[in-house]
Length: 111
Length: 113
Image 1 (spheres, each protein chain N blue to C red):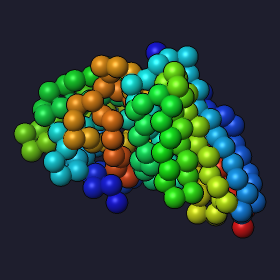
Image 2 (image 1 turned 180 degrees about the horizontal axis):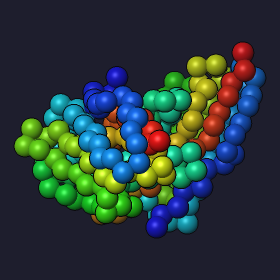
Image 3 (image 1 turned 135 degrees about the horizontal axis):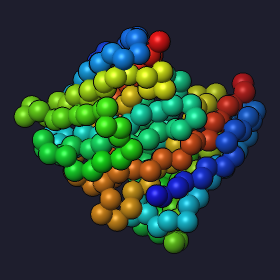
């Protein structure tokens, strides 16, 4: 079983501040995805990273895949209230069709 | 809007009953996945179909079954329902079998009373 640990579980910050959340595992993944989920809705895919050390930017969000492809981080610059949500990371192993999800980082951005 | 549709949005039923959840994948996607999300367990993979055939199985109970039809829509059947089956059930789809870009539907909230 590929377990993904996300930390911190809950983070509350003021609008305009920066934040970083983490997704760690002892397993190697062929790809890792980040999603954002709002209450009662489905997760929305933000990014997929596949290469160790890869960095992808999506406006104010920066995603990094660890060199060993076991961990990832999400950095948000100048957070806005619209960034509030549950951020989920999900990893796929080599030849494995299923995604293993972490329990998420709940981010609250206070106006 | 991810392009994945699920019906119904909400479902309330009694213990022991049987329900069917329906999913239509994004246009062009051949893979369909089913996930269960509960507060304590997070998102749990149940099963995957690719072009009508079962490709991967997760923690799916024997009381649950699924299938994918020739038009690629999928149904998840839950029977002999128990209180603990109350959860959000998500369908997701991807173009390929490997699932690097997986798109989720809005979910069906099942409440078993």
